[in-house]
Image: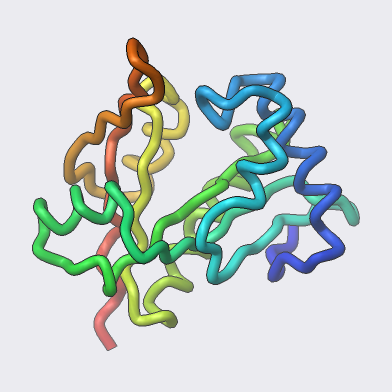
Length: 171
């Protein structure tokens, strides 16, 4: 497996992969199939990477730095770190047939290592029902710093856990 910067030519492969992930496990949560392409393109992406295996894209992750984000607010309240020092790990997904093979773990580690190069600390939010993802983050030493309830509709919310990456090594 090889991790490299995502390019414009990866768009179709990333969308195809995310559509397969959505069909397999509903990620992104509360997103209709006809909105998956918009979900992948939305956000304040500052960097993104893909994992390749045998010449095909098998994973994706990005760092987003929105000017304001409720996840950043949770982290700031819990830790005192300002939003300007945070980067949101976003759009992390892997090929369903390669789950538990290390693709997601490798992408997560790569992204957490890249955030300090932007002068930021990696944080993320995850659906509380996504138990495998939660287990991965905790096994990798990410700290749960709070929870977030996002209203989706009059009678619906998205319940998220908020995590902060391990402290980068001191130089």
